[in-house]
Amino acid sequence: MINLGNGSHIPFCVNKNSYYYYLFYLHICYLCINKLIEINMSNIDDRARDNDGRIRAKREDTKVENLKGTYPELGHINGNMHIGTLQEKLGVTSLSAAIKKLREKGY
Image (cartoon, rainbow, N blue to C red; front, side, top):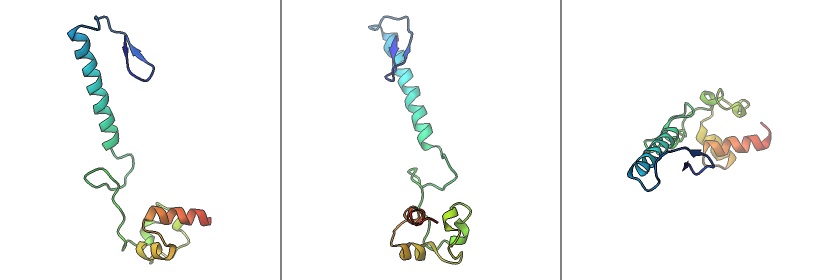
């Protein structure tokens, strides 16, 4: 048996001290690591990302009108207002913080 570390095992009929056992074990590790990398690097959503995989910040000159479909919390805000202006009024530095603050206010 090969212990996968999460409580599950794979039956394997080779002596643990043999070369084939370790070769098989390394192959399983390689497959698992590649799958984890694939999951982390794939876009779970449609948001734009930087080269390192982080979600790119919205530009401050983006109009609120363009984000109302994505963020219903912005429904009562004037569509011509820029994100930067909204952030200044709310006293925050990011769009996610602005949305969080609007949710806290009940919008």
